[in-house]
Amino acid sequence: MNVMRNSDPRLHYLTPLKQTPFHPRTAAENRLNDWGPWAGYTTALSFGDTAMEHSAIRNGASVYDLCPMVKYRVTGRDAAAYLDRLTVRNASKLSVGGVHYTIWCDDAGKVIDDGTLFRLGQTDYRICCQERHLPWLLDSAIGFEVYIREETEDVAALSLQGPCAWSVLNAAGFDVADLKPFRMRSFPFDGGELMISRTGFTGDLGYELWTTPAHAIALWDHLFAAGAPWGIRPIGTHALDIARIEAGFIITNMDFIPVDQAVREDRARSPFELGLEWMVDFDKGHFTGRRALLKEKVNKSSKWALVGLDIDGNVSVEGSIIYHNGKTEVGTVTAACWSPSAKRNVALAQIRRPYHETGNLFVEVYALRELQYAKLMLPARMCERPFFAPPRRRATPPGPF
Image (cartoon, rainbow, N blue to C red; front, side, top):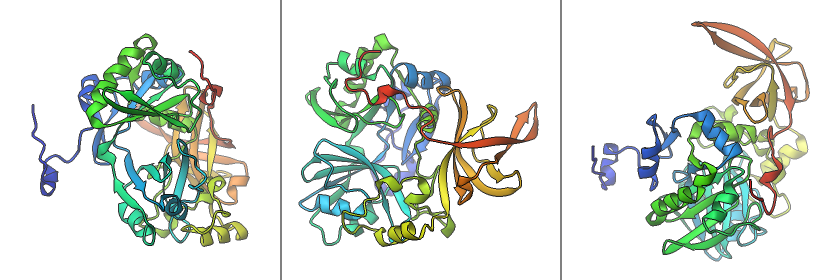
C-alpha cells in the first residue's frame, strides 16, 4: 500500500512515525515486520533472529540504522566556549577530527542527557544524543556567538560493528586502517561525502558512517556488496541492547531518567551516581551544575551508585528489586541479559549508598515455569564493567578477521 506523506506539520498525526532514508532496505530485510518507535521514527527491533544478529556483532559484521538518533549542529566563533559551559567535559581540548562521550546537567548537577560530541572543524561541532533538547541548548547559548540547529533529518547514518567491520570497509575502498578510536575521516562517495568515525555502542571494533539522505541507499548497497564475504547483516535494537549491556553502556530513559523529564524529584541522578564522575572537569572553568557537583564531591553526598552485577543462573532479571541480606530493599536492576559473549548473567543496577560497598545482595525474580511464576532470590555480586571487552576494540590497525 502506498501512503502519501503529509508535509503539513499540523497534520503530523496522519503519519505519526517518520521513515529513515534507509527504510526501503530495512523494510525489505525485516522478515518479522518487527518495528518500534525511536525519536519520532520507526526503527527495526529485530529482523528475524536476535541471537544471530547479536552473533554478527561479536563474530562478523553488523549494520544498524542510526538515523533516528537526535543530532544538533553547533557552529560559530564561541562554539567551543559554549560547549565548555554546557557540558561537563572540556570541549576546547577536543581536537578537530576527534570525538568524545559527554553529559550535560542542570544547575543542581543532575544529568539531562548523555551523548557524543564530534569536532568537525575549529568552530564546528555535532552533538548526538537520545532526547531532544533544543530549548535547553538555545537558552544555554545566551551571551555566546553561536548558531544551533537540529540536523537529524539532514544526516543519514549507519553503525558498522563487529570484528569484520574493518575488513568490510577495506573491501569497500575506504582506508581506515590507521584510524584510532574516537577519531574520524572523510571520503568522497557517490558524488558526495562520507564521514567515517571509529565509534559505536557495542564495545567492539566498530565504525559509524555519516552521509546525507540523498546517498543513503547507495551507501547501504555498496556496504552490503562489499561485506557479503563476511556475512554482513542488519541488526535491530534488541540485539544492540544485549551488546551494549555486555559493554556496560547506559541509555537515557532506560538506566536513568533525564532530570527535565523526571516527575519525582528523587529519580534524577548526578554524574557521581551514574559512574560518570571521571568525565567531570572542575579545572576548565564554570559550567552548568559545577557548584552543585563540587559540593557533592566534597561532602560525599551522592545517594546512589550505578554498578555492574553478576547474578547466579540464567534468568533475566531486568526490572527486578535488589535486597541486602534478602530483606532490605536497596536498589533496582535497570538493564540485564544473559551474555552470550561473557557466558554470564549480567546486569546494570542502581543501588543506594553505602550498600554498593557491601556484599550479600540478592535479586528478586519471578520466573515463568509452565504457566506459573516461581519466586526466586538469586545471589548477586558486584563486578567491574564492561562485562565483555575484546582487545580488538582498540587495536590499530584492527587487522583482518
